[in-house]
Length: 220
Image (cartoon, rainbow, N blue to C red; front, side, top):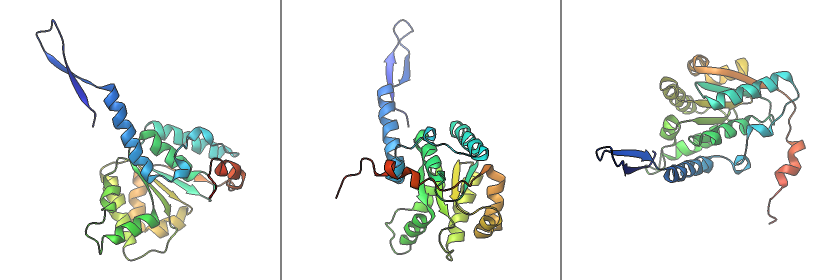
């Protein structure tokens, strides 16, 4: 939370009022951003929405909506479509902009949660995903559904749904394929809470970004 300092106002009966210390607030914000970046892949640590551009009108409108949502996040935002379309870039940009929250992939979520089955001291990633201010849940649908996956996703989605916590869901699946993967119960909650379902369907841009990707990398 914010840090505060007390100052006496002379001539006002010695009333002590409290003002937020700007220097302390900056330190707190930097610390919160540091926690966010611990969860975000290093590739996206400096990601911004201004870096992205699209060829089709639909994708340009989707990016414009993401800018609007970033200024006032509410409900669930679904970023769907083909690989290499900047979905993770968009989500990480929004997360970094708000300096609060966490990023996690479905596989990482499963692996971390399954450690708690045999290790009582393992971090409770399920609780973190439920309680964090903003959650980016990436790569939904990339792994086979285990017996526990539906329960884990349902717990996260339902708790964030009832508590109205902003959530970004990223997947290469779309439409009926995504609904079948998630199941009727989870899909129903997402559809009610979704502020938008955006499809990014242009060709992958990763090959054109190769030089930028390699910039600044140290040789082994």
